[in-house]
Length: 116
Image 1 (tube, helix red, strand yellow):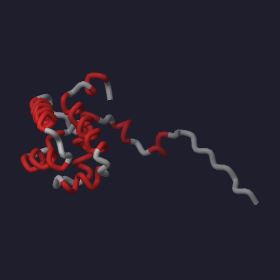
Image 2 (cartoon, one colour):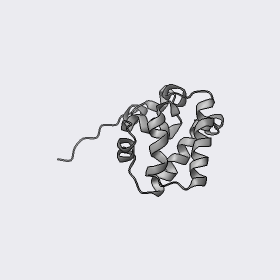
Image 3 (tube, helix red, strand yellow):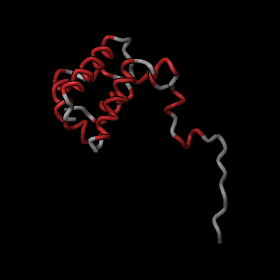
């Protein structure tokens, strides 16, 4: 991901949300279920795709993370900035090469004989 994308409001919001979730010690998969998102959709939220965040999530996330009033204000402000910015999608965040399986990234495969 290039520097411009790292400054995108969606990416900043996703990183902030991830840090808050981790600070509470909640596993991403569990948190996703608690806010009525699939784990894959929530994973996209943490990298900057905020389109999955609807009214339900806007209400429940601050409660689950036990955010103080100041943090709730920051949450809402960051989320609105992210939703107002150019929309990010999974395809715009990751390039095709980023998604190759690790084993496919190795062009030379060396087969060694098994010990007798």
